[in-house]
Each structure stands twice: as C-alpha cells, then as structure tokens.
Length: 292
Length: 313
View 1: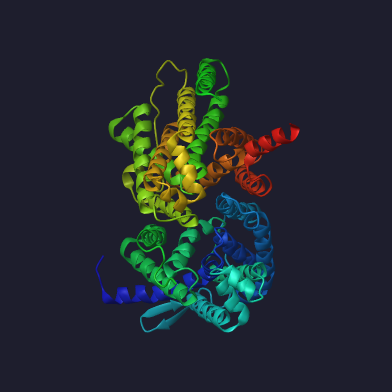
View 2: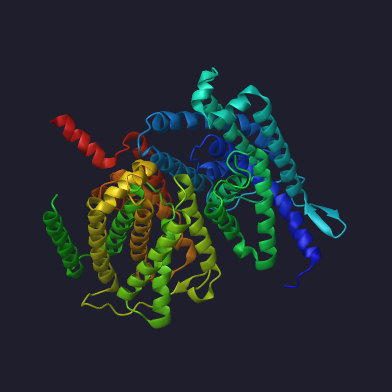
C-alpha cells in the first residue's frame, strides 16, 4: 500500500465520524456501567433490539431517526423494568456471589434477545431507507456519506444533552452521586434505588435512539451485538467510567484507530481493533484516560 | 464423599462408558455422548476459576478454539496422533490462561469478564487471517484409522472424552479440597481479607487460570477430528461461553459436583432440542434456563437439594 497524506486524511475524517457514532452507541453503557456500576453486558443486545424496532417502524414508512425518538420512551420503561428486576433479585439480596449471578443474568438476557431476534427476523441483514441513506456529500475529492453525518449529528446532540442533564439538574447530579456514595445521597433526601431506576431507564432510552443510528449507519443482523460488546466497552473503559465528554473523546480514539487500521490492513482486521484496544486499556490503565 | 469412594465410582463409570464404546450401540449415541462428556470437561474447567474463585470467564470459546487449532496445527504439520493433539491443545490454552491471568490480574468482576470476551475476538481475527489453518473458510480433514481396537473413530473419541471427563472432574474435585481451593474461596469472598491473611492471591489466581485454561483447551482439542472439519465462526462461537457458564450455575457453583450435574442435564437437553426442534432454540433454552436459575434458584440444583434435605429433617 502506497502511503499518502490524502488517504490518511480521508481515514481520519471517516474515523472522526465513525468515532462520534461509537460514542453515541456507548452513551447508555457509560451511564449504566460507568455511573451505576451495573454489569450491563446486555447493552449491545438492547442496542441491536432498538435497531430492529426502528426497522419495524421503518416498514410503515417512519423515518429511522424519528422512529428512534418514538422508541425512546418505550425503551425507558423497558429499562426501568429491567433495573427493578435486577435490583429485587440481585442487588437487594446481596451475598458473596451476587456479582457472578448479576453478570450471568445480563449475559443470559443478551442471548435471549439475540436468539429472539433470530427467531423473529431470521439471520439475514436488515436495513432501512431514508433520503439521507445511500447518497454522499461531495467536498472536492472527498465524499462523506450523509448517513455518517446523521449519526454524527445525533451523537453530538445526545452527548451534549446528557452532559448538561447530568451536571445542571438536581436529578442528574443525583445520578452522578449515586455511584459514588449512596449513603450520602440518602441523607440528602433522595432515594438511591429510584435514582438508579431512573438512570437505567434513561440509559436504555438513549440506547433506542442509538439503535436507530446503528441501522442508519449500516444494515444490522441479530449477532451484531457480539461485535459491539468490544466497541461499547472499549469506549466506556477508555473514557474512564461515567465521563460523558470522555465517552466522546474515547469514541473518537477508537473510530480513528479503526479507520486507519481498516485502510492499512483491510477490513478483516477491523473487529480486533476495538477488542485489542480494550485489552490494552484494561492491562495498562484500567481507570481509563479521563477517569475520576 | 471420601476420595476412595469417589475414585471407585469414577472408575466404574469410566469402565462402563468405555465398555459401551465397544458394544453394538447405535453410532449416534457416541456422536451425541461425546458432546455431553465434552461439556462435563468444559463446565468443570470453568468452575475452577468461575466457581471457586468467582472470576467469570466469558472467553471459553477462545480456549476451546485454541485447543482445537493447536491440535489441528500439530496434526496438519506432523500428522500427530490424537493424544499429542490433546496435549498440545492443553499446553497452548494453558499458556493462554496464564497470559490472560497475568494481563488481567489487577482486574476484578466485570472487567475480567470483558477482557476474556476480547480475547475471543482477537484470536478469531488472527485465525481468520491465518492461511495455514484455513482462514475464514476452514479446513476439511481426513480422519486417520481408529486405534486401540475401536470400530469407528467416533467411538474412540467418545472413549477418550470419557477419560478426559473423569480426569477433569478429578482435578476439579482435588482442587476444591486442597489448599488451592480454600485460598480461591477466600479470595472470592474478599480479596483484600485473603491477601491480608497471607493467602498468595496472585499465585493462586494464576494457577487457577492456567489449569482452567488447559482443561478447556484439552476439551476443545478433539473438535477438528470429531467434525472432520474446522472453521473459525463455529469454533469461536459465543454459545460455548453461555452453555459453559450456564451448566455450573444450574448445577451449583463452588462444588465439583455442580458442573457435572449441570453439564449432564443441560448438554443432554441441548442434544434433544437440537435434534427435535432447532439449534437456535437450543441456545434460547440455555439462556432462559440460565436466567431462571440465577433468579429463582441461585444456589443451583445442589442448593435446592441441600435446602430440601434441611427442611425434611
């Protein structure tokens, strides 16, 4: 491969867009795992579920991004229910093996969702249609697909909205506090379980919109969640748990790295990038780059 | 159960299984029985790290596939016999276990689990890009003639897997009652407390990672010979991870008998579901049972039996 500045620039540009997309799909996990300390390995499965729900709404002619917005309250309720269940069966009971069981629960849940999707839709890829999918913005010799720009836009809006919500509102600050010191929060007159329930609901609701972005960026298949275990956890761990702006930065690092590897080595090495980066961070600096 | 009783029963079971392989039973019995026995090996191996020490390994497919591909490499390059393939598989995935252990020593809980998922995908990508072992399309293999006087190769594999199952359960049982098992349980309950009481947590975790990894690899090593075929997508399939996690949890983690009960029940059920309904549903059954058990019977079948005994006294 001949090295050229143009190619590198194109890879970096694409990486930036990809990175914002990775940040968007990781935001929910950043709240659920980063702030609440819940071993939410089913996050990527719910992401793919969101993409399939968007697909279903899309077959009736609803725009995918709009579908994602419509699904957000539904997924919020779903998230509240999942947390309630998790709390009643694992957090409250406690015990020495509660951690192992909580992990096993979410891992099992991920598989149930994945197989449920296979049974309902089959293993074929599904995509959506919209005016901005398939065409590109031409800037001189560079072409930027509009679908990546849509993902970029949603990612930025989501990150800014979540950052503002978590730092400016009382409930938002309570969510940030609940992971650090539940007892202190209780003294402030807030109920930690209700705060966590709300936060997990928000995380899941955000995930619905992220799922819509996922299917806008490319067609989905039920087993796609496996790949996104690496990408989302890589972003969240790299970001340092629970930092929203860190999530955006970590998404960019992953997106640019993946895009450059894609250019230099070819597509077959791409899946190893996120998992490799994840292992590297876990081995060298498990508190992440922007950790508290 | 005393050690003598255990080994006598183990010898009887083993003799019965190997004897069966020489009988006139239907070939399918051995084809399905191999998988059930393989899961006894895998679940017992998983339990050493996951059950005793509380470190949840999601990376079972990485170890199984490492065993399978290590076996394949010595078979393809040197024409090595099955036993050498198994030893090579155990060696390589034992090394992998040691490496994963060293890399993730500082990590706890979910971080360790996620790191093990990462190992699956990294190794899968390497294999996908490795021509010698067939890359993404895989390799078709010609099985040699069976040795030791077995009628077919599948029968021989069944008998070999029966031996491995007894060995794996024996090792897992030995570890549970030895100082290693005690130390692992101590660090599962509180790593800080164990460290402060002079338990060499670091060393014990590495030992557990290595032994567990080696047994997982040994269990995976006969796969290319069993299927006469190997390819990355099925070798690195995450359904190995969910099954191997579900079996000890359903049987009861922390005791050597738990994974054995879980593997025998769940793997047999899986065989039945796969044949009668479909292989997708078989993963669904495992997922649903796993979630049901962690929610309703967190101590597994062993826990249910224990509380039933207690209440009937």
